[in-house]
Image 1 (cartoon, rainbow, N blue to C red):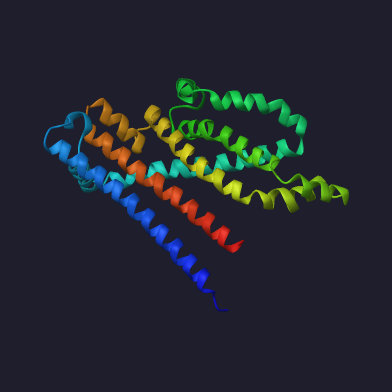
Image 2: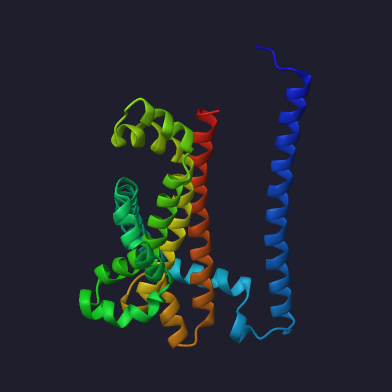
Length: 265
């Protein structure tokens, strides 16, 4: 099938825009890093408090040489993945129950709002007492931080389904399960993927908070240890690695989202 000149021009413009945005994104990072390095080199900023890109690179090399870097990254990724899976399953199931049973939804809705607003870090000492100073407490902290917002987002997506489609199936005496499977779920795939983006970032935050409290391994532990011994290079390096991990996780879900959108055009 031959494409029209207008469509070809549109595709070229779209590719150009994507390339231009990517260029600016990379340029911002390079400008920031070069400025940071120059300010550190000429002692305009205090390197004891802010480190520098060259020191971050040296710290990464040092962690690679003593073979501890991948161990810490692996632990954090494992805890994040487990927390993400558990949170997604719990959030999805509770959101389904809320949609199927409106009274249940109205009963727990204020509690979800309150629990989502609670400062979870303040519950850290209680979590350690309840669950113990172990990986379980880190996963539990991640669940507390991410599960409530996951439930709320998925449930709101279910409720925003086009009412006309639901009324049409109801007029045909379709069961609530049929309506959910035929209308609500297909209409909410995009919302579920968007919720995954939020969920993965919130889960990672929860894991780091948990590691700050109880762990002796992981990137959160490196941040805490670096703070305790006033090693700002270790702290900044750990935060830098976390930023890369968060970006890669976000990018992975974005690729899934783009593939879904492409297949459903």
